[in-house]
Structures are given as structure tokens and as C-alpha cells.
Length: 236
Image 1: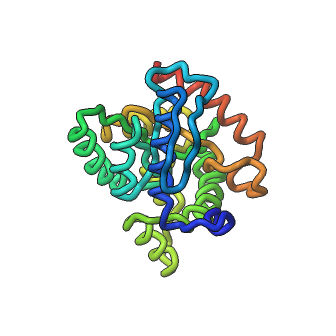
Image 2: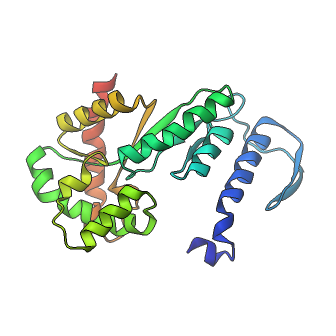
């Protein structure tokens, strides 16, 4: 939809991103520099403020397709997996990312990204929140599902198979009370050797979307405070 509004070709999204990443490094690392590319061009200029990090702030690049994962290896400093990508699919992408980084003689840093719903009570999240949250999340997830596991899951749901929210959340979402979430993160670390864990609340969408299933401002603020108070300290 965004590409239609701007009159751009959706199939050019990868090429556009590659050029944008190239420009970001160029202007961060150099002063008085010009650029002439396929999508962007500008005369000699210097970007201010200059970055504090050297040679530039780290670029974490997301993607779930092999070409996108290869792009993260070539042009990024870390790869971010899809937030609702199954663990099996993320590990397949990792099998692309690590050799690509090795060929470039660079570290294969990667980020496990997961949506979360953290509550005071494990049972309360399981029975009252998780089914509604998963339902709201899947409205958006269905639009962008690309992996075989996700397509198979939606086919089973559409065929009328009884699949619980807990089944869907397994290895895709962080959920429950702080103790459970800590255990889930540790299990992910052990099975994937990820370098970072990125957690988003409210499905990564603005809290004013009008979808109560994804959390309102108060829900999300309370989860962030609870996560900071009881989950983060468990990881030093």
C-alpha cells in the first residue's frame, strides 16, 4: 500500500533499501560527499550532527527472505529475524546469514525479535489475554506471512482445524508472567545462540490503533515497567 501511495514499484523495495543503506554509511563516514544512484542523488554535502560511533552507528537489518538475509550480511552490522517467524524458519535464515558473513570475514551478529505479552499472572495471561492477543496479531500477520510454516498454519485454520492460541504462540511469542518469559528467553538463547533479543509490546503497532486485543497505552506501559523491573535484571 505504501508503495502504491508513493507511485513506486513494490518489486524495487530490495534495491531501494540497498541504496539507502549505502547512502547512510557514505554520509556517516564522510564529509563533503556526493552521490549519484538509481533512486537517489545529491550534490556534495555533509550531514550533521556527526555520529558519535566510529565508523558509524550499527545498522541492524531485518528480513525473512534469503535475499534479504544476504543483504543484512553485506550491508548491515546485524540481522534481525521476523517477529512472528517460527523458530525453524529463523534458523533456516541463520543458515544463510552465517556463511554469508563468514565469506565477508565479519561477525555474524543476529537479533532474535519477538512480540511479547507479560503479565503478573501466568494463568491470567494464558486464559484471558493470549487468545485475544493472538487473534489481533494474526489479522496483521496474515497479510505478511511468507514462510511455509505460516502458510501451512493459516491453511489449517481456514480448514477449520482447532488450533489453540498457545499452539500458535509456541516458539513465536514471549508470553506469561515474568518467570515464564525469563525461561522462554533463556531457552531461545540456548537453542539459537542469538547475540541479542529484541522485544516489542503491543505487536509493534501504535497503541492507538483502536484494537484492544493489541493493548492500549496503559497495558503497554504496565508491561514495559514489569519487564524492566522483573525480566531484564535476570540477564545482568
